Image: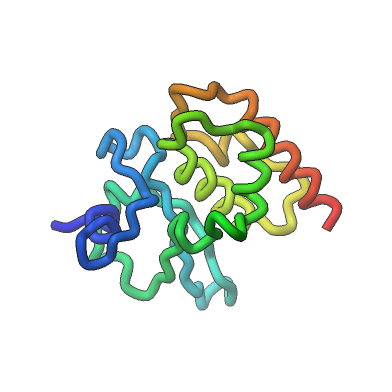
Length: 148
């Protein structure tokens, strides 16, 4: 059974920004955002998933957003820009997963005034930077959410 991660990174698709870390859903390097319409709630539902565990066949009816869908080197997404300005990345391996976890959480909770960082970044591991610059970036994003 093919996973979403293996499909995204395949030679046919080549979206290699989503990383394969542990392959067990424990490091968060493979996080992508899935979006679907929920007819009961009558709204779009956004959630972060570990693509290394997510079967490709379950993607049917969902929009998939990867790190490539957020921004590029010339036009960074605000989450990417804030993480970079706070020095929240060293080797960069975990960064796409961190960005996608923050993005998914903010899309799923647009009215929330305060980020639940433990819930948002739970499952994302960083072995180089440490978490202080990442948390600092998230707090800046949180304050910008409250101003908009």
